Length: 102
Image (cartoon, rainbow, N blue to C red; front, side, top):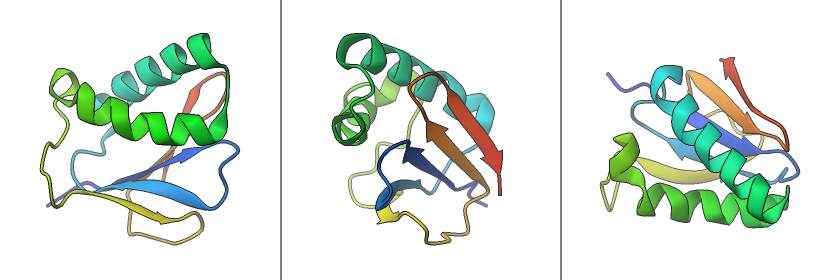
């Protein structure tokens, strides 16, 4: 059974990323923290750009973090407040990555 998760970017309150597989913290935290720290260092907490660049980063560096590389399933964009049946919710802030079990 899949362990789904959603990823929110602090400051973007209209959409979130849905990840259908491998949403456990042991796999997600390293990837999200590396991305968040790297983005914040080079761009600052520019929320809309961070949201878009998260998608690009996951595609470009997916193999490094063992992310699902399916072209047609496994990833999506959902309205910010929708419940997607996710087991974990991650929030990228200007300082850290928060993980909330759902």
